[in-house]
Length: 367
Image (cartoon, rainbow, N blue to C red; front, top):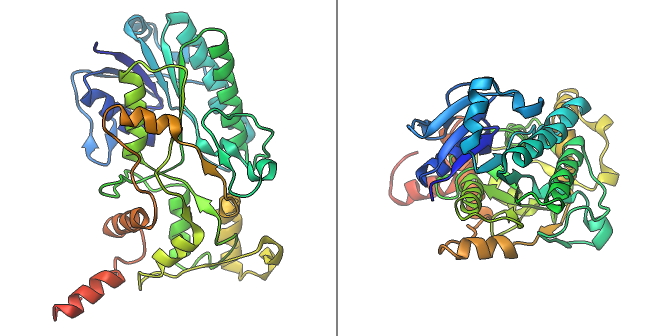
């Protein structure tokens, strides 16, 4: 059956790629955007006779759709809700109106038109789960509010939003939840449309602007290649899945030691050092570094101190039904991401990495 899918946040990083994937599977897509009218991912603009771009605003009831666009909703059988701010330092009113109230408006619309809801959440609503369950504890896909402390307004808002969705499910709405980890480039090419969030921290580290950060080399990050995230969303949509929660994270956790080791392979990069939080003092930073830390680095230090792991049994089962699996997401993926950033001119000055230099030397060439 060809599905008609309304995608909120369709111009966002996940939303745009999800639209392309859904179109590739024969779905008709109503792409809800706030400003832009052209969807562009890493492969360029998306064009399809089955793509209908509509303007709206999830912060308003009925998503602020015009009467003409609202008339299209009768054919919609699934809503993919990916509209949200992922900014860790947004004002509280933005979290409340966009991430929380926006979800309430989407839920109300899904209930009114009888559509299934696929809610895009985040695995990092786990917060500091280790403080509840111990070091390297596993936050499973059926967990939600486990009393975990949260580190920022983003995590808090995504937890609240998913609680809204869960209550709607309890009241009978057909719901599935996809929780990406740290969204990053394609698992095969490393490509990504835009570099944000932790990519920015990586840029400041490699340029020597963040040389010392509080953290533990044993802390781990859960990378989520964009192709994995969109495949999980599309699998859930096209196969009519409801009632499940799926952690869209790669097969491997990557430690900060791994990150430092990979960065050290590139002669053009500075490599920062992580120090215990008790030994870190902002006042000891040089003036420029202190500015970068206070404006950017401070928002991410919670992710340099966690060892939580994510259960993936449901998502592995979902992918296995069509012969898929979670892609590797350890040091080799990070190298792929870094190489893509260098090609794009985002990181450093594009100097070659150690492997390229060694290969050129062995062949008698110059680099």
